[in-house]
Amino acid sequence: MPFYGTVRKGPRKEKARIVVAICSHGGGRERREAVRRTWLSRPAKGVSHFFFVGRGADVTGENDVVVLDVDDGYGCLPLKVREAFSYALRHYDADWLFKCDDDTYVVLDRLSSIPSSRYDLIGDESVDTRGAPSGGAGYFVSTALAARICADRTLPAIGAEDLVIGRAAAAKGARLASSTLLCKGRARLPSSVNAQVSCHWCNPLALGVVHDLMMHGEGSVIRAVHRVWRDDVFLLKSGYFARKNGGAMGRWIEVSPGLLQMDWFDWDREFFIRSGEAYVGPVDQGANKMQPAASRPVKIPHLPSHYRHTLVISLANSGRKARALARAEEFSHEVIWSPGVLADPSKITWHDINGMEAYFSDNYFRSRYIPAAIGCRLAGLAAFEKGVELAEVVPGGVRGFIVCEDDFMLKDPELFLRCFEDLPEDADALWLDTSSLRAPTYDLPGTCLQRIMGARVCTAFWLSVAHAKEIIPKLRRSNCEWDLFMEKQMPGARYYGPKTPVFRQSGELSELNWPLRLDA
Image (cartoon, rainbow, N blue to C red; front, side, top):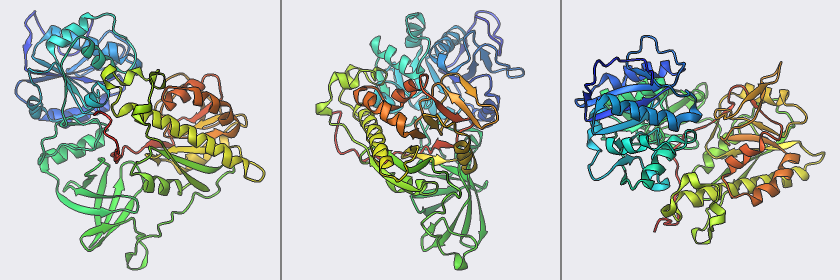
């Protein structure tokens, strides 16, 4: 198999205890450079690494990148990772392979604290909840297990790579384990004062912030009391900050004694004022004596009448209700809370979970994910039914309504309005988070929109009343996740979306307070 990158002469293999295989792609040069500047700049004895990409990628001047003779697209990750394992086995004499992504932060000199000869695959807590690791958090595979996986040519070439690898390992009798030191999000950030090994969803800026935490500690720690959340915030000497829970980040300055300006990476600037032992916000910088701003946000002007109601859905006992409702009030006429349902595991049948096979193994039937996934579908169904009910009582009627999950975040108010201005009259749906497109798209000339044929992220979308009435009976009969159900509706309907996302998932730390012990 042809490859480019570090050339190894002769049959002799490089000796290493752990080989880190970092999954990247042709357009990921900026991320790779950020990884080299940050966590790869702190090498560890016995740990080697290489990036891997697919064919066609330009890696000129990048001597640590291997180009594999596989498709470089996201859909072919199982084959891509399997070929990376094969490359590592050919060129390294190692005990363990550690696969991660180019938006993962890894503390190399802490990796050796996790592997154990008692196990064959070690990943994050996803191993316990769905029987497979998170590829973003990173996972260890023994070289013996990697060889068996590479030899199995019956494994799927497309799909979710971490699920494919995890399920294949379990099917081969591998011993699986989890570690809280690996994190699939930014809920637990590695720093100089903890033992955390990895975190995920780190763009180049976030990689720099986490690296700052590793090199210089957590800096000043303040208690922040926001209108919709409370948390400790690390104020780093470099001028960056990070929330302790959830990992939201940005830049900070003290504009006057006791007044902090917080420029979030992912949403608008806010100001916090010191009040006793905490900082309270957001506040109006120009207000007399810096009193907290009114809790009722100012709505976006000139809202069209395409929607009147926004329905915010959630699992039944999520702690994100207050934050979600406050966000929705920023752009919507009328906000309705549509609570979800946590399915009773004692009443779940095999029919209910048919179509969710990727998320569980046979011994995972009574664990957390399945009741939550079924509850998510029931929540979506309840929101659709409520939206139709509300629309029918509005004098003159409305075209549709918006449905938001409880971890949504508005990115671009101007584009939000432009989408509705450009929306065709016969539209069935307007997908407001287009960050997870999985099929071809077709641009609408002269507009900001495109026809979308497949997208699974259900962060926020507008649904026409007519289309809701059409698909509600189908959703009632469905037994798959509701975002997969919605994706299946796209090719035969008129679904549109912006060319860049208007909304995104906030990545907040889940605050579910599970009332049931489902894995008993």
